[in-house]
Length: 126
Image (cartoon, rainbow, N blue to C red; front, side, top):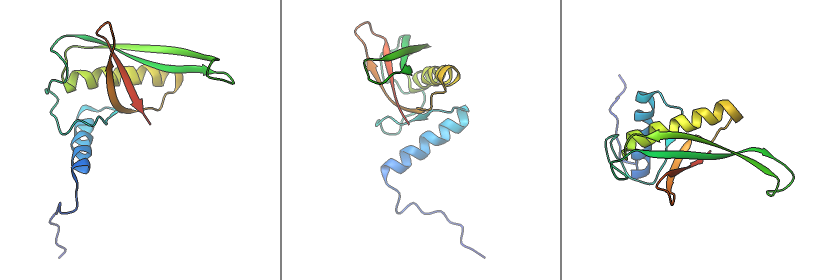
């Protein structure tokens, strides 16, 4: 009989974080992956103040020969508060809109940049 004991001797903090967020991703049924360098947090952990915020996601819709010849498109969602869960839900909504509209593939949620008006700009990676 094989020993089926799981040992975590060679697992670093990064791998534990990724496993935690992968489990949440599966539980939530999301396509996006929480990839912020934030440590292990629960969905109810506050990152920002406890108020609703508009989340925007700006993507290239069409691109010409140079970066001066680019058409941008912006997708929006509202995070009902500043928790990981609310922010991730808004990021997932923005990503799904972009995926449907322009076949976007940048599904790693890497950051939220605070804008002058208090809204948050979603930063993604692929």
